[in-house]
Image (cartoon, rainbow, N blue to C red; front, top):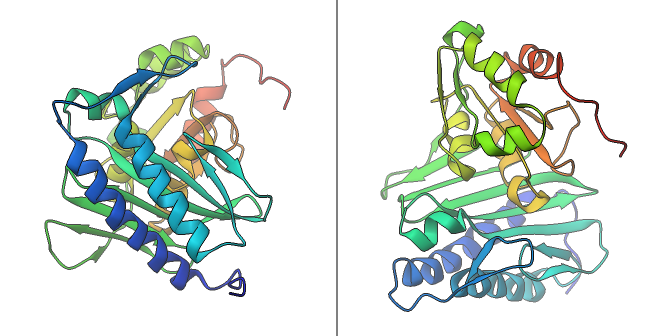
Length: 273
């Protein structure tokens, strides 16, 4: 088997969607299961047998179909050094999953030279799946309907904007609580929808700004192509591109610069990279 060219994204996307199909079968089979096995990792986050099984299945699929690519999974770490890297969060929203809350999903991304070029977010308990590849638009399928293309909102003024801030505790621990409160005073509406769902609501044009701290590349990589192909922008809270900086800010694009400026006007100094 020869390695696929970097521009063969449609074949890669087809593989990612196939991997998501298999992941959905595994995760739904364990959702709300009475015998779900739950343990705590060293970082005090939860992991379930479903997380491990989903990641194992995706890792095996990538190894079989893209043996020249590298792999980065939340539960099993990194394998290989190829510049084409599959980045996986087997169940984003594990806390929701183990409590029986249906807001969770499998995140599958492919990054080339560190830049995410395709993403799949599959949320089977919600009956929804979002995906995108660079240059091909962002798409949503739900409840068996035909896929439809999605776009971010056209809101251009903070006073009309809807914001999801994910978790007050994260903003407080990062030293950004005061800038967040200042932002909430400027927008029309603020809520904490949480996890991958707020980013997908943004890509669908249903909210306009979302951001958070204490996130890893596997929490974000799959989201970025979907947001950008839907017409939005993604960066860290301090404006750096990519999923590698420990924070995230996604907007409809029109509101990105003003949001960055407001959040960083009184923010603590950025640590050295």
